[in-house]
Length: 171
Image 1 (cartoon, rainbow, N blue to C red):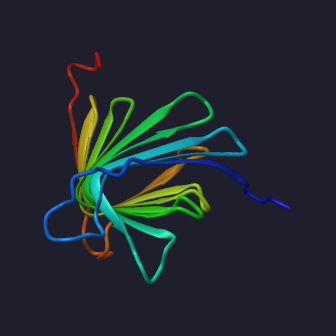
Image 2 (image 1 turned 180 degrees about the vertical axis):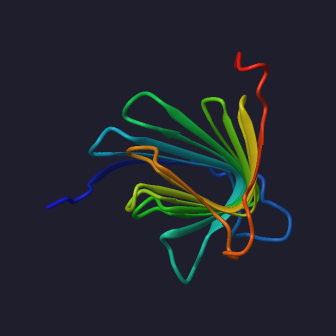
């Protein structure tokens, strides 16, 4: 059996000042969780709200997240919005998404982070940049365990655009 168990610490800081336009908005939201493999996840937002129809879904705005992998590596994610599932920690980021991992930077319109599947999926207007190359694609899938990466186009007749940034081979 490969069951995932999460020990969860949830911190919600509720501002004393109501946010204009809604009594349901919560400012300065922060969630932190750790799985049984030692991976940790922290997500913060300037403001958000709990979906009254699905209380496990937290809608967040102006979002910053960090995935602390058990091997000590960190993945940073920023976006305009996110929907965070506080039961399984899966999160859908949207709007000006930026993901940074070591010297890799990926921008996209959307990012799905699935702890259940150990998978990051970036899609829509994907731009990847590193010290040695840049690329444009429709979708990038990254396995969180082995870092295997798939780069795809939605139309099989379209090509992935890759540009090398080689400096006489001395990169």
